[in-house]
Image (cartoon, rainbow, N blue to C red; front, side, top):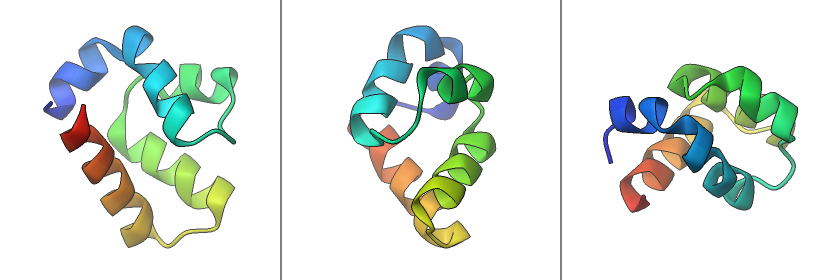
Length: 65
């Protein structure tokens, strides 16, 4: 799924994001509003990952949708 589709359907997809990254809260995911770079930054911050690791995780997750 491309990122435009994810962003456009974020309300229905954010549950899948929460399954993938269980430490992220509903409020945090609501604030992201499907924006890729914000999701990457949140994952980077919450999980202590590098920018590249977070970016790759989000990319892999989006490809599985």
